[in-house]
Length: 91
Image (cartoon, rainbow, N blue to C red; front, side):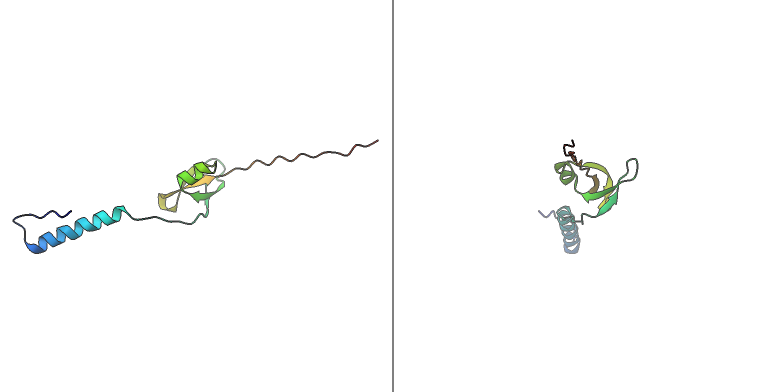
């Protein structure tokens, strides 16, 4: 949509239209970033992975701080490994 001023000159209308188009297109920028290591802001300053907030929650992680210039969260993913050790029967 273009808005023109009735009493404006042609160059003013062109400038307004160009400015409006720049603003409209800047809304649709797609931000991408690498899923690199980052430092969490919680106790211990642990190493997390830079993900989107949605990805972090979907993977069962906890967002702890920002990364990628604020477009991502430093996601702390914790895996619990349970190992069962059995002893052979001794006589």
